[in-house]
Length: 583
Ligand code: ARG
Image (tube, rainbow, N blue to C red; front, side, top):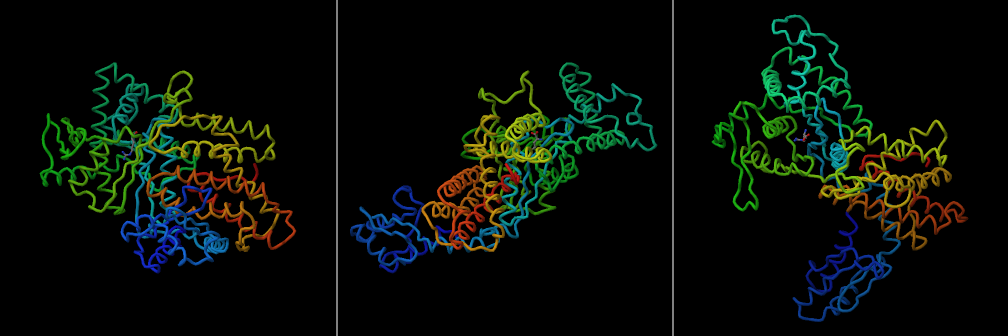
C-alpha cells in the first residue's frame, strides 16, 4: 500500500501540473501547525520564484485542481501555503484498505534480502550482567522489525567463547582438581560425560581465576598457555571447553528465554577459528599486512580522518589472534553461509573504534561485497537514578537476573495489591507487565543516548510507559470481548473529532515503522504507540461505544478500536513484549 503522504503528494503534484506548474513543487508534509490543518504544502512559495508571480495566486490555482472529495478543508492561505484536512471518506477508505492488507499494507522491501543481526554478545562462563541488557533488548527489537519488513533476519548471539577466559578456567580447574583425566596428557579413554562443575561453580571459578591472574604472574602464564593449547586442539582441554560451553549455554538460553529474546544462530568466536589462517593468508597475498613490533597489522587510516584510526591488529607477536581477528573471520563465515546484504552489530558505543577498524579492514580485504552494508549501532549506558552507571547496592556490577527479578517483584506487588487478576494468573500477568516496563523503559530512549533506569517510573501504569500501553490494549480487548465477533466489521466515516484523530494516528503506522527500521530506532515506535494510545483513550472517554444505540455506528467504532488494537499489538511485538488479557 502506498503511504498516505505519498498519495496526497501525488495528488498535489498532479494539481500543480494541471495548473501549469512543475509537478515537483507538490510535496506535502505533515503540518507543523496541527491547530490549523493536518497536512500542508509549501510548494507555491518556491514555485513563485521560478514563475515570477505571487505565491498565493499559484496556491489558489492549485487548490482549484484538487479533488474536493478528498478533503474536509483545503485552503490557500497567505503568503502561499496550502493547508489540508483529509476527508472522512478518504481516511475511512484508507484504513479499510489497511485493515484488509497483510501487515497493514506496509511495503515489504526486505523480501529476498538477508540481514545478520549480531547482538547479545555474552561471554561464556561469565554471568549476564546489566551491560548485556541493552544489546539483547534493542537487538531483538531491530531483528523483529527486519523480519516484519520481509527480510530473512538471522539473530546471531556471537558468544565470547574463545579467549583468555577459557584458559583461565582451565588453569584454575587444574590447580583445584589436578587429578581429573582432562589434565593427563597420556589419557586415552573417554572423558566423563558429566561436567566437573555446575553453573554456579563456574561463575565462581572465573572471577577467582581472573583476580589471581593479576596477582600471580606464574598463574597468568599458565592461563595463557592453556588458552594457546586449547586453540591448538589439545584433547583434554577441548573436552573441558565443551563442558564449559554446555553448562554455560544452557544457562544463557534460560536467561535469554526469560527476556523473550531468541537467537537463530548460537555461533561464537570459536566457530570463526578455522577461517582465520586462510583469511590471513589471503590478506598477505593482497599485500595488506605489515609487521609492527612483531605483530601483523593492517593499516586502515584514511585521508580525511578526523581522529586517529590505528591499524587493525590481526596476529599478535605470540601468534594469537584477537577480537578484531575473530570478528573479521566471522564475517568470512557469514558471507559464506548467508551472503547477507547487511550485517548489523549491537554493542556498547565504546566499541565504535573497533568496528570502524574492522569494517575498513573487511572492505580492504574484500571480505564483504562492496554493496554489503555494515552498521554498528553503539548504544549508551544504562545509569542509576544518581546518573552514574547502574550498580548494585554494594557497588558491584548487577546481574541481569537480579535486575529482572527486582522489576518482577515490584510489579508482582502491584498486581496483587490492585487485585488485577485471579491468583493463578498473577505470575503470567506479572511477567508480561514487568517485561513491558523493562523493555519500553529502555527502547523509548534513542539507542545512542544514556538513560536512567528508574523502576518506579518504568513500572507506572500511567505516563509514557510500557504498562500504560498494555493497559490501553487490555482496555480495547475488553470492549471487543463484550461486543462479540468484530473481525469482519469495516471501518466507517469518523463520527466525531476524536474518531478522526484516532484514524489519523492509525495512518502513521507505516511511515513510523519504516523510519524505525531505516534509522535503527525502536524509540520511534514507542513514541508512536504512546501517541496512538493517547488517541485511543481520548476517543474512548469522549464516545459512548458499547452503549451506542445505533448499531451501524457502534459497529464502526468497534472496527476502529479493533484496528487500533491490532496495530498496537503488532508494535509491542516489534518491541519484544506482549499484552495480558486483564490488567
Ligand atoms: N563479547 C563481546 C563483549 O563482551 C561482544 C561481542 C559483540 N559482537 C561482535 N561481533 N564483536 O564485548
